[in-house]
Structure formats: structure tokens, C-alpha cells
Length: 575
Image 1: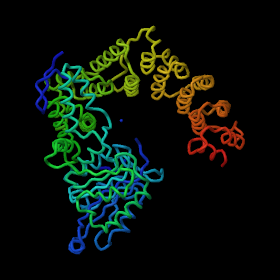
Image 2: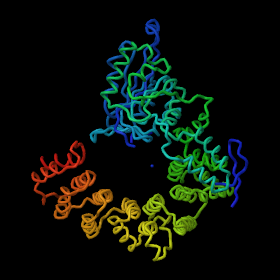
Image 3: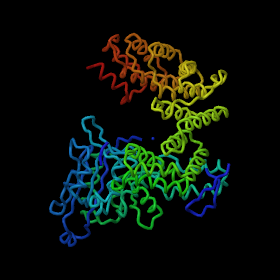
Image 4: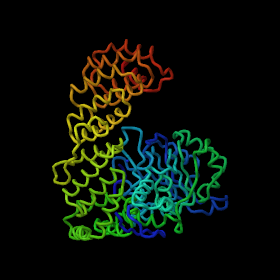
């Protein structure tokens, strides 16, 4: 366990009659999880010693603030991170560490992991690993005694769903013919049952914790958070700390209202059943065959459950596929492949999913479960792309999905590129041209290069998506784009095109010098910043008079406040 880095009848679990079926990094400071049982001086004297476990993947400000403020005869500190060891959380579980207090210091990316802001540090804490520790019997003591959790990182208790999966499900239900009122009721039930935000996911992990603190938006930097903590503990004398009751005083010591408090889920909460399902995937005591058996169970509940667990199902299928040689895994795959009812219901739901990326993922899973041959999968992918193009409504999101699919196509006899037929006249449309370019059409590629630096805003956005997946590589393409950028009239479009060109890391000194000449007359600070970014990523600035150009950057900058890429470039030029 690493700690880093038609009409189809469905059944619903909440009083719905059979129906027709249906990826913010925040550089804030720290996450702290803290528990203690301190109420009065008398209680202090009688209370047993408690263990403060620290997970320091970034700054140690919060940890040191607590160490200074808490009485050493009452609290022992244990650092869980073992530098240079990837499985340090598993090591803590093996050592039967029991944390009364857990302090995690690290930036939080909004849902997936805590990470450092230094390239020197290599420790990470994926949220998946927190789930695994919370769910696995092999790690039963680590979170067993937690009463309070403090999450000092931005958005750690943000209540907004990371992705609108419930909304996507609602669209599939509407496509299948469900009345609007029922769609609304079903999606609200799903949102209540399943953790779709950072706040709800943390509540699920830290089950039964009485006071769970974190930030609904921006959090203070580590030194500021540490100072606030010290002031709070000095003012309260530590009497509230670790009681499991939410403290209004603590919230008041963090101005701005972003620090909020909630609690971990309880046994009677709507998400208790969801937590049990999460643990069926996260528990390291469940073998690959057992996870496949759970997938089979989910498919027989209803397809909305499958969609909500799609990420976890994909990971379970991948792990099981690597273990197909094991008899029990092979048997589990064979059982899925032979389940005609599950196949019918699953593929019926996939046909109603409007989001192409989700549909492609579901079709790939169907192939791995033996419900589609590679040819059948390719035919379905081809049909849905052609249907979307025929409707004239392909979006940049659709293009992103097709490009992602095409990136994964290889020669492993799984899924080769779909055989989409696009008429020549359709290539005049940017959506069709972008999809054709993703699938390898040379004419469409040229169309996207022209669109990137053209006057059509919509076409330029399609080109941006395409070129994010197929970065500029041909020298002639790079040169032509660089020339065309100089003639663009829209500053916003020019800044975006420069950012796309920067991804190619152009190294021609003469080309970089010509682009640098655009800086003094650039219409906006965004364009100047984009030029600076491109020059920073370029490989050779030997054609530039470095001291003179640094002075030009200062003299003509449109953002006098600085603190952007122009400043970074000035510092590099003056070395």
C-alpha cells in the first residue's frame, strides 16, 4: 500500500418504478487532523497521554505550532513520513500506530492528493491512500481514536462537486424518457448518497469524527495558519482542544469565514451505505476476484451506481486484468462475460450517456468484461462519433474525448482508431476538422493550424483542444504558426496561440528573437506574459541582447505590479 504518489427496465434503490435506462491545484498550506480529550484542568491531570501523528509532506509550521503550545507531558509526537520510503503510511499501519492527533501538512489539489511545493521533496499523500487506511483491517488502529480533524488546506472542505456526475446521470435519465420531476428527485438522492465533493469525501474517510475542520475555499499559508493556531490555543488554554465538539472560537481565529466545521459520517447517515461500498473497493484485504464480484453486484443494482463508481471499477478491472492467470480471477471474469442480463443493462445505459468520454470509458470496460469484441467496441465508437458530427453539435469536450481515445489506440489488438467517415465538405466545420485531425487526417491538421491563428474564435478553441493532444512538432508548422501569430488582431486570441506555441518549446534563435520583438507593442499584459512564458520555455535565447532586452521588458511592461512570468524572465536574463 503506497502512500505517495428503446426501452430498458432498471431498478433503483429509492422508490423509483422501473424506468427506461439510461480529471485546482491550490498552493495553500497544510492539512491537520487533531484529536485530544481535554476539558478542564482536573480532566487534564486524569487524562492519558495522547499521540500526535504528523504527516509532513510540505511545511512543518502547523506541527511546530502545536508542539510549542501543547503540554509535553500530555502529548507525544510521531512523524509518519519516512523520507525516501514510498510506503510510509503502510509502515505506520504495520507498526500499529494509534493516532489521537494526526497533522498532515501539504498543499491540496482539490480532491486527489496532498503534495509539496518543492521539487526536492518527493512525499505525497493520495486521498485514495487515506481511504485505504480508513477501510482496511490491516490499518485498523491508525484512525480508530480520532475525535477531531483539522484540514488546513484550501478547498479541503469545499462542498462543490468535483465533477457534475449527478448532472450527467440526469441527462441520461432524460434521454431515456424519465419525467423531469423524477430526474430531479433521483439526482438529489444520488447526490445525498454519494460523496462527490472534497467535503463529503473527507466526511466518509473520517467516519465518526465529531469535529472536522477545513477550508471551503482559500486557506492561509503555513506560517499564518500556525500563528492563528497559537493564538487560539493561548486564548482557550487548550480546554476545547480534542473534545470532539466544534469550536466557534477556533473559527473566529481564522478571519474571512473560509474555515468551516462539520463532522464525519455516522452509522445512520445517508452516506453510511456508500462508505461500505467505497471500502469494498479500497480495503486492501479484498482480492482482485472479490472486487470483480462486487462489480457484478453493482451491475445488478442499477446503472446509476455503476456510473458513480466508474473510476473505482476501472481501477479494479485493471488490477484484475493483471491477475487473470489466477484461477479465481479468471472465474470472476468468466462469470461477468456470461451474464447476459448485466451486459444488456450495462450497454443500454451506455447508449443513453451523452458525455462521449464517459461512453468511451464504459465501452472499454465492456470489452474487458467480455461483453464486446474489439470490433464491436470500435463499431460503437465510430457510430457515436458519426452521429455527433451528423447532428452538427460536436463540442470542444467531444473533441477532447475523441483525441484522448485516439491517443490510447495502439497495436495491442484492443481498440484501433475508429473508422469515422467525414465528408470533405464537413471539414470546413471546426468541430469536424478537429475530430478528423485527432484521428490522423492530414488535411484537418492543416485546418487546425490555420484556425489557431485565425479570426474565428470558435474555431480557435477547437484548435487549442486538438493541439493540446497533438502538440506542434513539425519545424515548418512551428515556423508558420510563429509568423501568423504576429499578424493576429485579437490580443486574447494571440495570448492563447502563444501559449500553444510555447508547448512546442521552439528553439530556433531567430524565431525567438522575432517573437521577442512583439513585446514592446503587445496590446495587453496577457500577451506580454505569454511572450515571456514562451521565451522561458524556448531552448536558445542566444540571439537576444540579454541586458538590453531585460530593460525592454521593464520599460514597456503593461503590468507594473509584476509578480508574473515577465519578472521570471527578467531574473533569468540578468543572471
